[in-house]
Image 1 (cartoon, rainbow, N blue to C red):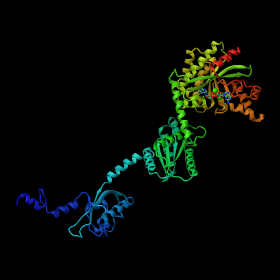
Image 2: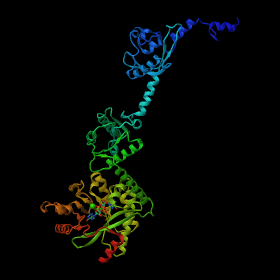
Image 3: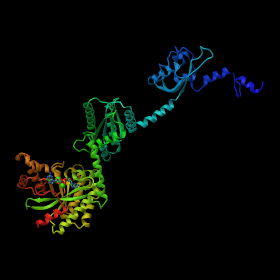
Image 4: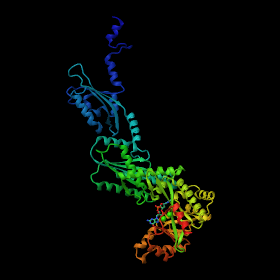
Length: 582
Ligand code: C2E
Ligand code: CA
Ligand code: CA
């Protein structure tokens, strides 16, 4: 017999140390680093009890139970419930011979309740006789890998600070829901807390971050299987309502959210924007569009000033409005940075002196005339300019335009008609506003007595001291300062005394009341007399009727402005009017 023939007979082709096969197989079975169970039952009757199987040590070790303990247990008893259905289904198919075998990742439960992940392979095993083996089950412990995987998935889908689901996961859930096309009324509710950024300056980042976290914890109480909470940005939450039946149900959810926000933010006196978009899972298919529309509704709500916690539902006009705002913003950028762009122009409304019965000055009012949008009023574009901070640049241009008008008045021989310029809080609080304003005056050789500035009363609420400092500088140089829209803001008359202002402009609201209210109950006359006691002159705004003018004259108001005297005029028309007077 050749040596090759000898080796073949020993059954171990190429084996250097011949070992009896039984010893070899037994050692492999006992010492293999994977769990092996052999089911020795062709009838499949008792196949699910471990006691009926031939099991190696590693199998026992992986399952974390003693051999004796396992003997009386079925594998279905210690399979993790979520994995049982799939395992049983596959096993049934295998038993019926529909599949040759199967493998799956599944969990077993240990006696202490913890879970062990295994990769399991089930494969048929035929023995020497008909009664031989049925199948073999191999298990490999993959718990460590699974835990790492899960941690990775968790961090991919959760926000580390609040533990809430993140934006990634929101997009995943939404796209999967939209793909499934189940008809259901759904809603996304966005909660925009970006106002908390103002708290960072006051209380620091930790306080603010903690407030956001606590708010998340409160909101979480309203979660359920069909109401998932996400944090999509560090100061933005989002509820995904996966199905609701009535509109009342949805408004109920919104008002609960609104209440939570009120209770969390009231102490710090800030608001939050709540925007909602409703959709049908069956009709909608674009996650991006959906989130864009939601953003529009929540921005709208965050920008609203009338109620800090009002809920805004998305509608198509909102999108149109956003588009228009964007067009205005673009126009303003050109106004700010392109000197040759002439969409911005000024009109001048005469101010009328009731004592001397003549025009005694002008208020400069800005207008936009854009190619694309036509005429746009300041009530629309000034707030956009303020929000985008473009007002600082645009305001510089306005100041120069008004100064040029003042120079034209001087050329026409008029030097006793001051022109007032409206200045926003953002301008006033911008770096070195007073210094710059005075420098332009100097450069254009403008006499301080021919310029006034108007600041709306409401701006004093937040930054009283800083604003007063700025106007003190201007006042010192001889520039008059008027409080605009007086009576509508928050300033108390007690503080008015400390302000460096020369004039109060009584808001149109009080002038309108003159036509409506019982004359005995009118307070317009009181405002005039208090203003005088504080040493300010008074201008009544929005005077449209003779009756209003006579009341104001009778109660000592100094000046009036309004359509009764004149509407705002184009620069040339205003100059003509002045020339006609002299
Ligand atoms: P405001 O400073 O209170 O200006 C008075 C507003 O009332 C002007 O509206 C004026 O056209 C209007 N008005 C005047 N008389 C009457 C009247 O008898 N009846 C009625 N119904 N209205 C009258 P306008 O020009 O639309 O300006 C709106 C606001 O925009 C201004 O309110 C002011 O706050 C702001 N604004 C205008 N120009 C500028 C500017 O150059 N810079 C800044 N920062 N804000 C400006
Ligand atoms: Ca004004
Ligand atoms: Ca006003």
